[in-house]
Length: 102
Image (cartoon, rainbow, N blue to C red; front, top):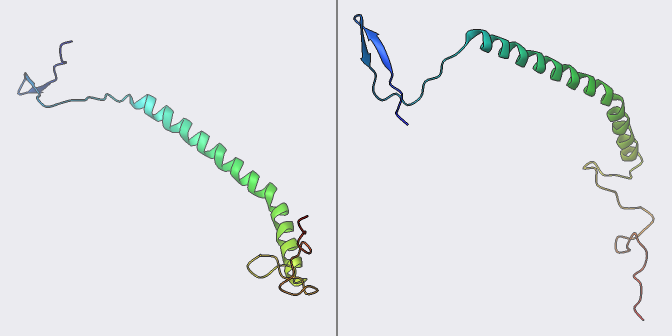
């Protein structure tokens, strides 16, 4: 395949341009339509994310209140890890005594 020749008009004469490896010709109308479509998709995604956030807000607020209630009841520590039960010594397993092998 023969390489494509690129020329430019200089002083009313076409002269070859060396060293060009890639040429992109832009269609302004096509670019404008593409940019408009991208904006439409972006606006639709933003609207969907806002709707999702609004729909999830009540659930997340309820979860936050539940964790606050657990914290106030001293069932979880401030780092959200389970608190030790006050009715068990520290050495006793919360799962009861170890099973004995036979």
